[in-house]
Length: 115
Length: 114
Image 1 (cartoon, each protein chain N blue to C red):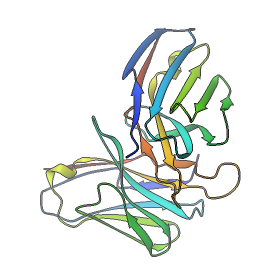
Image 2 (image 1 turned 90 degrees about the vertical axis):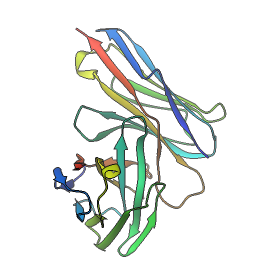
Image 3 (image 1 turned 90 degrees about the horizontal axis):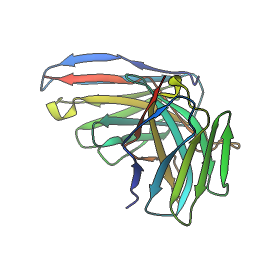
């Protein structure tokens, strides 16, 4: 299994509070991603990173920010959580070399509930 | 805009049967296609990755095919087992991008009856 750890795995918070989810990898992959998974929508890309301090927006980036100060860590922050951000958040890492170029590996997910 | 569709949304078959899951995409300009398995409450497990230049990939009882021109991929599962019960997702990486941004289908929920 790819070495990806997400924390926290479960969190309940109130509307308007800040929340930070952490993704830690031990694979030294260049690319890291944050997705959210919601019933009827599948997985949608929030933000991604292509290197330390290099990040870009995905299709559902409003209300989220990210940071990547080290290769192994990718943080997702909800500055002021809203009920619409209740979801399961998945971190993924991507290989960039060899026959498996482009293959993504996912973490176990972080379930966030915003009351 | 690339869209990925998986039909059926749910499938139930008796143990031992061979089965096919379908994935279609609207834009044939893809870099690769990946099949995943997701168990309830768990993350996604990569099953097979097919690069755009390939027609199929095999891993054990699983075989995935890719027909770019028609915008279709199939996942064939031979001799199904109850442990194969899960949601199966396909995802495409559009061509021309420098990163591995995937576009997902909404999955097929598979139940294998003992």
